[in-house]
Amino acid sequence: MRQPLPFPLTKDKTFFESLNDWIGDVFYDELPEKGYDLRDEQIFMSFQIEQALKEKAVLFAEAGVGTGKTMAYLLPAIAYARYTGKPALISCADETLIEQLVKKGGDVDRLNDLFDLNLDVRLAKSRDQYLCLQRLEGAKKRSDADFLDDIEFSLPEFVNKTYSMQNTYPYGERSSYPEVTDEEWQQVNYHPIQNCNACELRNKCGQTIHRNHYRQATDLVICSHDFLMEHIWTKETRKREGQTPLLPEFSQIVLDEGHLLEFAAQRALTYEVQESTLQDVTESILSDGMREKTLNMIEQTIDLHNEFFRLLRIHTVKSAEDRKAITKDPELVHVGKLLIRHIDLMMEEFVFEGELFTIPEYELRLAEEYFEQYTFSMRLFVEEGDAVTWLEIKDEIETLVIMPRLVTDILDEKLFDGKIPIIFSSATLSIQKDFTYLSDSLGIDKYQSFSVPSPFDYEDVMKIFKHPLEQTQKFERVYDLFSTGDQSLVLFTSKMEMDNFKKSLPLDHQYTIEFEGDRELSTVVKEFQEGKFQILCSYHLWEGLDLPGEALTKVIIVDLPFPPKDPVFDAKRKFSNNPLEEIDLPFMQLRIQQGIGRLIRTSNDYGEIHLLLNEDELRVEHLWETILPVPAENF
Image (tube, rainbow, N blue to C red):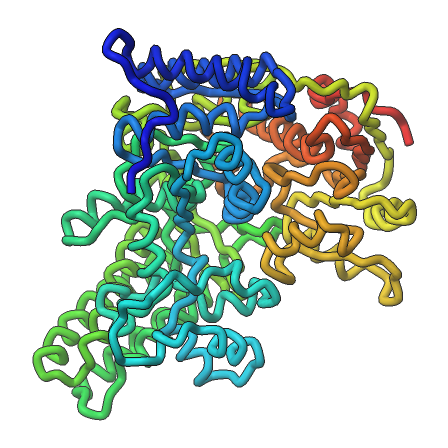
């Protein structure tokens, strides 16, 4: 049910004039009366957002830590949503940040209580954040692991009943299973090969119920950048196929930690081919009545597919990066083309099998959808073009990934088209107030921008120490830094480096350490904030993590966060006149500012930043020391 505007409208003022007056009243009068500090930077930001809403502009709103960015954008966003009759879309960097935004006592909760807004706030998480009943059933056939029994036991009663579905409610989110590891979750969550439209369990599916729930939101829909990009890319296709778009119509977009949008856009446009998936799909359609010709075609397809991946491994460039470059050897390309032609012929045989009803309809539709995507992806790989390709281990499976080099044209057409206002919000959107790196990466030619500093006096509350070390000595120094007993966040530049550190720890160490991926992340962050363990190791939480007070007093940055030497960034470097200044340096500067920004979150916070620096990193000190909030001292 739609709620009224938080202020009255009169005939002698436009909505935006009234919104402007209300923002002033809230920040200058009401919030100070309720015990909140008057922050000029926060007020300025909110007024700038009001202007961007009015002009349906793209706005880069850079405001330092402690400005109160969330409240500054939420107030005008809620009012505009109620005025237009369409919810505001708040897009966060990832699912963990969504949980932080809506947690008990968080900004949304606090704002609701302060002004009695009766907010309607609903979460729209990425599809892989939901349990898949079909995959759970398949996993239980393959394994008797305890976590599968725990998940099945937790399912609502209506899932296994055949009576009226009137009492359904949302269930099955990743965050509902905090003790399940990421690796275990990958066995039972939604997977792109699932044909949801043909699934007989669709009406009982937690993802379907969640979708129906958040589509009715009136004030705020909160999603991740990844899910927003998936919505943007698939919206028109889903409409043509008679499906509902993933997200409802919205009045505006607020991109919290908006500097990460480019990577989400790239991920949404990637296509993946896994060695094991093809065999899983083909095995699912095998039946006793299938013609021998079709069976032979399936067997030959599997053989060609396995041969392609054998050659792929041979021609993968060895490196320490997660994304490994591929040399497109003529033999590899030839086998790829042969595989495409063979699958096209096999699909013709599937048509005959469908007419004979030898393959169940659900399995047939799933297989057809999978092979259409497979051949489309493989054509991108074997053809000459701008696609960037690499081999990566995903969910413990070797995965061929194909991605378009640039997403700027598509973003310009489908997102930055001037139809709705778009607000980028972060403490780090620019390099010393220059927004060129971000605007060029996203292809945004016309935008408004501002940058306001943090209200904190960093000189009094933060110390930054630099540790000159050999690269091989870094892990030992990290371990030594634990001895002070501080609540510490250790930031790595990759999962591989974090895992290597984990392996290097003494078996008899006395510290309570959590590693990203061992349990559901938002639960781990909550327990860290509550002081249930001392050390959190992560390769992912460089931005958005909010741990005020004693919850975090030490941040250890193991390596300077330069972008990896992988195919994605190599493609960007190839098309740059000065890769160091245009690609590598801006990326590192933005990311290190984000990492340092985890430490001081409120006026009562204090602590230390420790930068572990090898000889090469010290050699470029002049390139990063200028963006530090306080000068670094030798440890």
